[in-house]
Amino acid sequence: KAQAGQIATALGVAIPDDATPEANLEYEKLMAMRGADFDKEFVSYMVDDHKKDIDKYKQEAASADPAQVKDLVNQTLPTLQKHLETAQSLQKG
Image 1 (tube, rainbow, N blue to C red):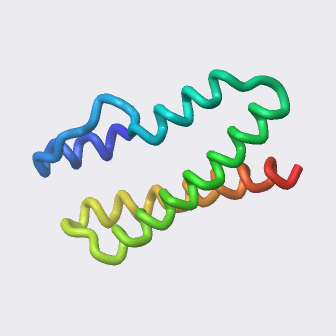
Image 2: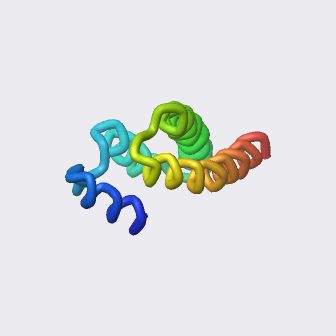
């Protein structure tokens, strides 16, 4: 995250202070849930969100410029993929 912030600052890109509206809606939804319903919704959201993030990262890796951005994307993708695999294993659980 710190590396991404440094690159964004160097490129003059503003870093958002808040979560996305979609994430805020999911947060509100989860706050109203308990037990197994919470677990199921949380894991489902994590799987879907990581799939979206990985798709975005792959698109960026294919066209990223400057090289700093492409390097960061390629360094981050394995971690995102591992997180997705973990969430999917919990979903199957």
